[in-house]
Length: 441
Image (cartoon, rainbow, N blue to C red; front, top):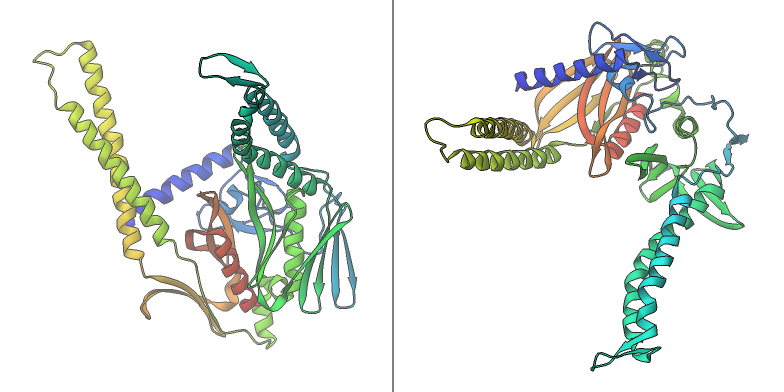
């Protein structure tokens, strides 16, 4: 569907131009605002303040929590996090953030309201008893069953309020210590003397990234997650966005130092004879999600088109009046908008159906990096790049679906960003990007 892709590309370009005019494009690393787009949409933008480079679409979400890019060994100004290195061990001491993420305040409001409601709802049940002759007896004992039933129902709301207070105060007052060394990463949480420690083997570590922990005022709140084959370590939703970005970069540098050394030096390492890895990494697919989205859009659009046609089936005679004309215009708009939904749904459904069973892989040899689309072992499409020109691979957020972040994946080749995935599961995208970076290192 070349025409559909061209339309989508045009809409994206118009959106980016609008953001640039309003000062909405900012460097993901330092926040410097960009007011002018590059001549070509796939051209790389380099920040004049800090040197960070990336695509214009990456800059479009650069000032949002979860998309900031930190730099290893460069802690943000004013941070109270202390990093220590002793032999092969690196430790980060993270003091209490003092930020309950809004959970403490909302938790108290919720709990106080539930307490008042509980008192108001249950008091009549245990103070009164209605007899068969409709007389009310005060302090009747038979109201106990009703009271217990009401309390059982309200206990759910009490649990929610107390859970918000628990996690809010823990987020606000807990100290954390992260230690990397001796083949493991260990997280120690200390809250009011109660300590909890959990470790993951470095060999099974799959990704280190910012992920959505919860939403506040309809905005996602991110925290730091280290995900391994045997579990996850999660903390830091109360930290500043700059601190989260820095910790992610610092952890990656400690765990996978070769992938954080800067892919800009790939050519120099090859010239010096340093061996490069041969690898093949599969990207997460997006066809299933797109198919569901397309079918739903087509069904909704088709249903509303049918309703509109039924509405127009009646006639108003040979000379309709003013209100009949307005009504007919409204029905026409209804059918037009519904038809647009139906067509979009059909296009997305067809495109997604054609992608079912197709796997995108990034594969590397000593000389080339290839992006291949494959089905049942057959190569359907291939893009080949000189390995010395590949500077980095990035995953950045493009939106959310069912509360989960969705990301696009771009390969930075020379001064261009080659988009290789547009709408894939954010967590899986981060894991794939980290794996490719380690292989490229």
